[in-house]
Image (cartoon, rainbow, N blue to C red; front, side, top):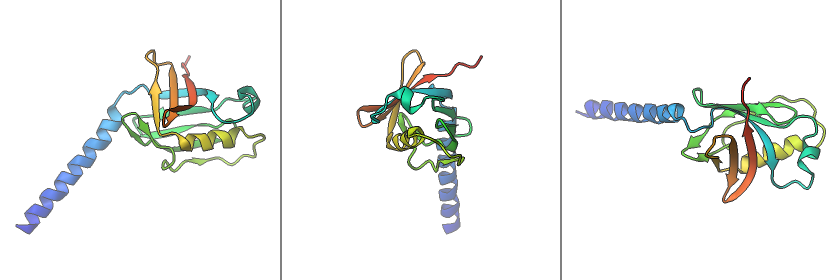
Length: 146
């Protein structure tokens, strides 16, 4: 009897974990694809001064539950941690390449990303906002592949 209950419990846990992963991976919430940063809160340096050569990007791969991008200098990558409109970069175990970078752009981007706790996408699907509490921390434009 105990083995039947134990087997049933394992089956239920497996079933629940499979459904959770499936719902995240198959949900089309508009995030899929590449976005380019066009606003960041906080720094006293103008946006174009912070990112004079290359604007940061973020790419969402919903099928693989992964993020990647460029922080204006180095490539970064990590897990995609979503729950409805909640997003967690702090626990995403983000790694990056290690090229030497000038200026404060890279550090500002990565530190701000860790503060984000939710997101919203404009009705037309072209603007992605990262939010902390009720404050828009970052704003991205959808990159249309040509």
